[in-house]
Image 1 (cartoon, helix red, strand yellow):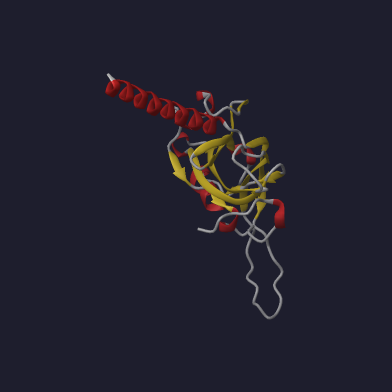
Image 2 (cartoon, rainbow, N blue to C red; image 1 turned 120 degrees about the vertical axis):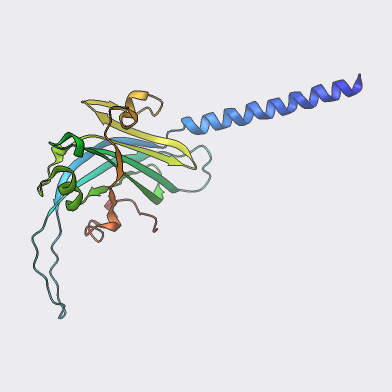
Length: 218
């Protein structure tokens, strides 16, 4: 009888720990650390720098890049102690680039890992669609922000979703559990293709100083 009691107690304790672990995991999943204000879609020309010091210049015609730039605010996580930064935040992007040829339309994807993001401050992330990708999908060299008809960004920290913003068909979704927000998973969505570039992968890398959050080197 005593053995049964001990077994029952052990089982109860293990069950309690399991429930507690699941509860902590659920809390972590629901923790919202990144709140998006908006995502700006803009057009940028390839920057043309003035060269000095004997470096020979090369003439070229600046082309169109489509810029996808989220503005967000960070909040202090429950597990933070003295840290005033979030060491890593992973931004996963999904961008629907439309085309007059239906078969050419694409959901372009990309991932940017930001490091040492200040807590309780407004920050900016950014990805780009290159001129060659614009030409590949649309068949035209000219870019246009209107070609981006849907976009989303999902932010994770330690494997848990801590921020979400999705826009499609005029509606905005900020709850990652809302299936309407993940339009790229729809059966009718175009095929996905890696095609979004982080700022360090583009000619814009040296521009705008601390405006954009730091990017982890690959």
